[in-house]
Image (cartoon, rainbow, N blue to C red):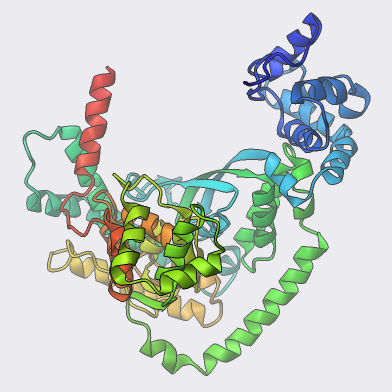
Length: 547
């Protein structure tokens, strides 16, 4: 039986508590109307107190106005909007020593996960967006989509691409601007004929709503043309993250060689310092750890340049687009089977793995089938035992595909600098049509510009690389995360490019380790003309039912 009503409060205390907790009697409740610094400090102190959280809030925060400035921070706003925000920030700074002392004294780095913030990051390049999304644990980013939004808009007569400061003051300025304008002009120009081509190839089912068909058609057209957009294309992002996440990402931004990343890091720190200052103290731009890492980073780049200069032939020999499984554990079947048995017996994991190594294929199959038999759809997660099998894939695919697959959290991944060395992707819908020449001409023009800029400024040259050009990266991933990735990214609504990568990863694992094929039963290997049509139709039906 749960202990409700185990704390007693006066009427005055209950009036206060009702503002800040969802209930004052139950043993489960949610905090509300409190800024991040107070919630983080309260939970930090909570771990070292025998008081309930509500009692702790009253005793050490509400009643401790001198140090905690509680009323000043959470009280009724004296002004509206910016005035109130400024007053609250001033109150937080006044009580900073109090909150820093609690956060430092009652926790470790994980305390940074107790405070978070929602941040809007607008008009940054797609290149910057990828760096911001690199650190996924503790953060949840959402980015403006290239398949639902047209990127042909102009603001004050100019297309929206990043004007990289170093390039703007270099001899490449005109080349950079003219090439970007040409890419955007081609993208905009090809939307109508691309729409006509897709419409002609797709017979509209009279039972499908016009709205669903139009939405699916637009997604298909933009999927085909997004390869023309350069990496410097401006986008918008929303990120929710905890303090630990933001601390790490600001550190990465500070030590980047690119001006845009450094500027985003400074601005991000300045804004977060207004709402969660105690959680990002070590992210300040002049912190000594940033300086040391920047020195290390420069040394690594210098050393790697020497390596690649003597390895150009090897790079060319291995630069074909595709997916390649380059490493896996041949004992992984026994390891997964042993881990599946572990929680149901009193044997050690090593003994169970050794035991499973001695079993026949039929006996192993029964154990593995038990581990996946209950799954009825891809959203049902498999047992954690599948994490005992690991795989490493090297992938060369277009940057658009990388952007989509890059979002997966539970894996290790790294990419190389964007370049134009591995060729580019042409959607099959464009091949053999009247617009193929215009599409490829834009790609060749971009490569010419990239080659000239990269000879002097290889990192800055990334901004001009169109999304259709291939990039090399690797995934190191366990079987459980790979199952989720392949089943999700092969679904009908997905982009054909990343559907192919997901399908190939699943196929190669199943070829090397046939016993694991049972774990990929919801991978979709079919092809679709308008992959999003069913999903858009369901959306329309739900909207009509709601009205």
